[in-house]
Image 1 (cartoon, rainbow, N blue to C red):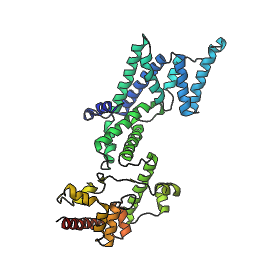
Image 2: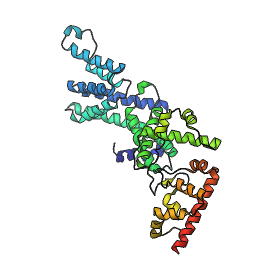
Image 3: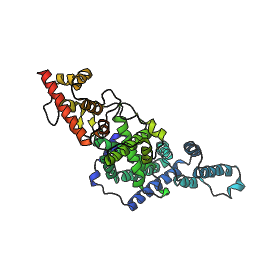
Length: 372
């Protein structure tokens, strides 16, 4: 699906009621029924059934469900060359099509293959195949539209993280569509349960890719978020950060897993990226403090010069110098939050915040004097 199609699906979300479990099951059943009939139409051709088997074998190597399906296919081929055997087995392309749709695995690659084949079907089956394709896609869209509110809910949890909420909703909707295409009602769980993970992963992936110039694998990003979350919770409770051993217990990760990501974070921070705790941009912090006047572009250039910044920061007391350096990531790989800085300078979280704002106000005074 392209971005226009995604937008078309989500633009009327306020008018869509949340689907009940019964509605979800009904829509998923209609999707499977349409695809089952489509498979019976498409797989009339032997070489296409063989390609479907190749897709499944390549995707799953060996599982009991796939092995059983491939065994049925082998029996079908064998029965064609042995009339006596053909009377003893009840395997046909029709029964294989039913078995294919009822496989308890991700069938989306096979579904994509079947949908792609529709335009290549000759008359008179072409119109029927197109109708079945539209039925499948229409019900898939109903499943997506009925769960857009779930995307909104998850996207709000990741607001103010450096990517616009609208963009997060767009990315989450793509994850929702992927979930709808991969959903298998035969596994017995609700669609919303299944979709939640796909939506969250799509949003996390977007944050990871768009918030930093350096791409971090999503599993590594998840591990970082988990570690930082537990560190912050521990600090909020005990006013100190956990030891490595305590962090292992809190996160369930090994020493090696924690160490491997200890130096990874948002390795590059844009001057226009929001500072999460304050909701301000770095360039705004350096040129304004609580609605003070904004400087001209020329003055902004001076304020952004690293050597110039270091020279005026050096006029602060040592503790305040450290707070400013750590908070803005000057000469280090990443900027730190006030919660991470507080134990390093030996004061409370709130006092760290106060000293930071006091430092910025003093630096602005020095800049004003130099400009005058």
